[in-house]
Length: 146
Image 1 (cartoon, rainbow, N blue to C red):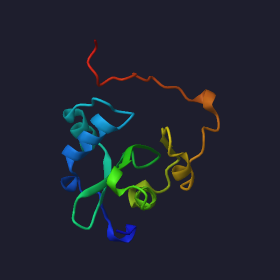
Image 2: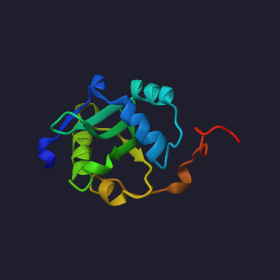
Image 3: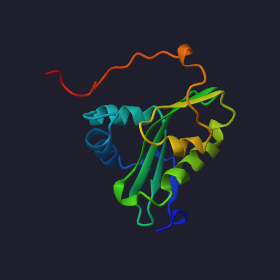
């Protein structure tokens, strides 16, 4: 299947929430153990993109947290293993970058461990002034305390 055969939708009703939850909870490095309830809440309060194979199965996902005026945070981006190597990450990013509600933003941010070259194609760079940025990061917040 070529990327042209895949369709993109921002319709939340089309999202395969079970698949998204399974990937984030069991296969991602950034959200291991996240509950289904938290995934559902994050989807409700975000602009979500689903990429679908010709047979209708969800192949990829991305979530944008944004005021849709000045700022956007790109997160929870994944392409399922069976669909990787076909340019779908790039296709997903093309659709996200072109979305009408995300034009003219002052700042986009994301965090990635291993996809820097993909995001660089869409204008992402390392922080220009890291000392200005701070975080309050909770390490492994979805796993019960032992």
